[in-house]
Image (cartoon, rainbow, N blue to C red; front, side, top):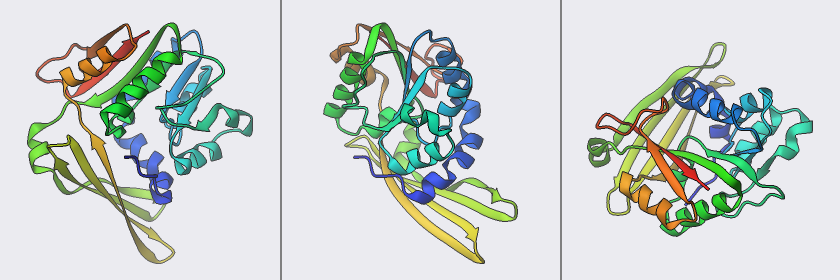
Length: 250
């Protein structure tokens, strides 16, 4: 079950993920959005890492997120005339007056759905909000079996400055739940501020998926067809693939 992103996580989100994620998926999703001729919806718009660039490129894009703290950051970075393009909604039951030609759920949004009933509801709801011949794209990672068994123990994935002279460090630990296919994640933040070192933690969980599980889910949904790629360059799945990129066609 999703737990609300705390304010400190939302505060530093852009700084961290522009560094560790943009080179992975940013151009892929931006290219898909730019080539869409109609309305686009980003599910999990968050603080706007992708949304703002897409909007600035001229895309007719809307965004939803389940986290109020993340949307607060996004709106703070948006001109007020665009605030009505983002809303607090859930992938499972979001509603708009018009339908979309392209819906995207980047960077593991689907993995926050830990129950199979919610996963199927989400797929069907997305499908029903697409125009005819519409496309839904989402990604999950290919599970690393060694890491699923051992987990991560206090791995620093960001160590830098968030302001001149003020340091920020993020440390990640994971505890796998193999029976329920969950990865329990603990994020620990440490940052300088007002002559004091701040420390805060946040725990959440992700549901990991295997290839045929994803295929079965989509086949149970109202989508008519689908394909899977193994990376953001469009390569087919192989033994070296680290991503499942799902293309679901209405």
